Image (cartoon, rainbow, N blue to C red; front, side, top):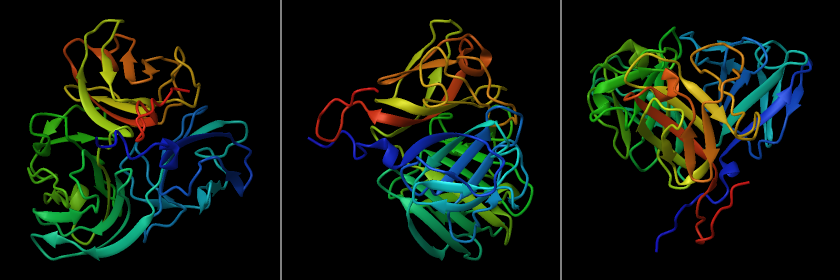
Length: 353
């Protein structure tokens, strides 16, 4: 029988860390368990922008983007100074190290790096990448060519279920592809820095589903500006480690249960059928059901006090009737990463801790 999962220890590839700010340059954040290739951090105490930092050739450690805005990539002294084997070091400032403020960072590992030239319609352009096929995650920095049919290799060996892309050298929106968004998700779009629901468009994904080798782009400047520096993050669904699906709300406090096949460590949801905020929870900031507090990726708000869901041994269950997560008849997409698999590759039940 095939292995249930190839990822017995999820924290080898994804982990959440917490810290208290001390306003000191050179503050070392440890406990990640690996050298991260994507760090997404947020001030939990105060209103402040989200900060996304990447390890991919051509992007410096102190350059960051935000999920709650369309700003071009920004560099500055008050951000990540360097990546380390167990985390990263930071400077000071409200976004990541203000005195006595509480912070969270979600971290993913890629590892293998390379470069190449893009293919498809128009002139080929150079790209660099960081990829990990075991956990199904890649980051690609590429040059756009402004031509529909431009194809970007993702190096994952299977068709991505979740793709995030945008031009980062100018102010542009985040373009989101999710394989369960609609019956034809390649024709549709969600925007990370917006509460808007799904819209139909052919200029983002060129009405072409991702393949096992490439993601096809339309001619929109949002993710394919000619000679613009662009970024694409892709995830392949990996049984026992990641799940990217859809559920329908029931408008009841006894909300729907969503099966993932693992105890979630991190869940992000979005109403796809209408307007509402993106919602993100994890298992570290409070660590127990009854106090799973959300952060809103499209807003700069501090951590909220709502309790939208319980994280269970094999999935998550919605607890409220709020439209952001459980309106009757509304459809929602979700992205989830595991704390541990329900069953390991050896057939042993992975106990929730």
